[in-house]
Image (tube, rainbow, N blue to C red; front, side, top):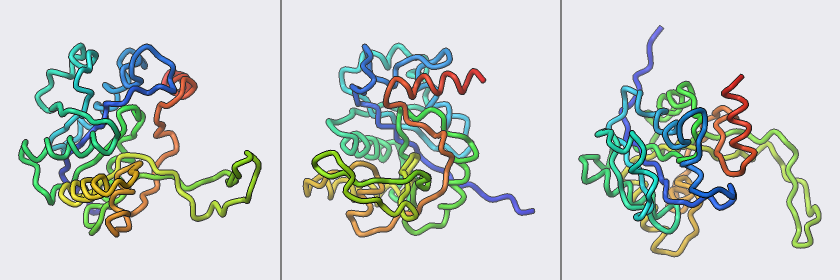
Length: 234
């Protein structure tokens, strides 16, 4: 049996958001989960991987929490200034990675700071499936529930065909140069960019969807954190 060769990669973690929906006293990535902060668990998903070339975390300029973490002194992790929106933070991280030696044709994985339950199997599946892809792509999960389109009055307008709907997760994996140019172009054109794939789509590309696990959860609300705490205890 042939063992697949995993490509090397850089990682950019946008972590300049405040996470207002968590109703906490600090950004959600710094909330405690199983003895460590959420962002520490997120970083651990990549730090033990042999293909990692470098990792850039894009943080708020005046972030007072990051320097208190032990991982802030890890030489494999470099800090970049985050921006007002996710796309600004990712672009800053990409540009900083280039100053560290990353090349335009290197793969870069962008992952949410508050998505700490990424499995190694999913990470490796993404790397294997996209290693030779001309565009790149993202982990995602096909929709399982019935989907409704709402009208302005809050009532059902129609039922959406769920067979063509996927929920976008991270990591999202693209060539550094292509992603940087797509983000810069979309931001310059005033286009709303909600994830990295949408920037590539704006630039005329069709990213690949790689089926991942549904428990690759992004902590957005208090119940998400409670769910992860319960799952990790079991």
